Length: 164
Ligand SMILES: Nc1nc2c([nH]c(=O)n2[C@@H]2O[C@H](COP(=O)(O)OP(=O)(O)OP(=O)(O)O)[C@@H](O)[C@H]2O)c(=O)[nH]1
View 1 (spheres, rainbow, N blue to C red):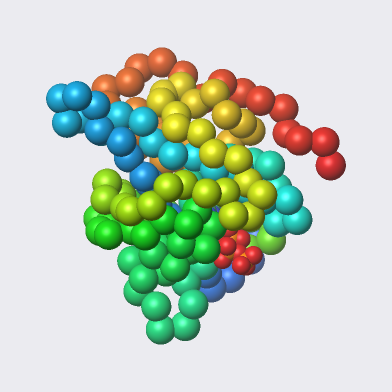
View 2: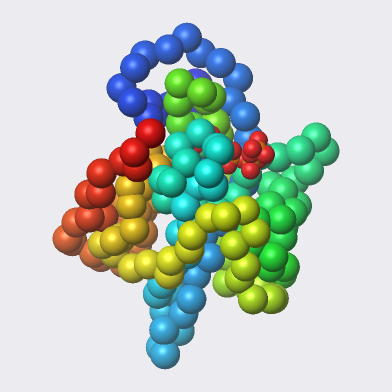
């Protein structure tokens, strides 16, 4: 059975092999131990969708597991050491620039202070997300978080795209 593919822009394109991407959902817990704020970062200047907000991560390199790629990417981008990550959701997203298979992993345990090493911005967010605009591939994740949390309101506050 072929896997479901979400389109980022509503354009139907010929099938392409997806590129695997490791994505970390870093979570803080509240006083009762419940998952609370989650980390969003803006895409760095010079990258496709620069200035859009996403969960940190990046493409797998040859021979890497998703966890290994996540550890490497979050060290490179944020200067932290991920100590453990749990597989959560997967989704294929089709963009004009690429088709990607996003492997989302929850991260509760890391070491080090967050540093924005690629000129990006960061925000600890809750629903509805105020940073924006959010990347198309981020919207389903906010939906899953809303479902897990029983959040009924808007998932994010719409923000105009950055000037080109
Ligand atoms: N990091 C990240 N990428 C995402 C998310 N959602 C989503 O659709 N993507 C897509 O997944 C791909 C990730 O590639 P990237 O450019 O961030 O990865 P990278 O750091 O390895 O890039 P590089 O090739 O410039 O080194 C992009 O096409 C991006 O649009 C997300 O939440 N986080």
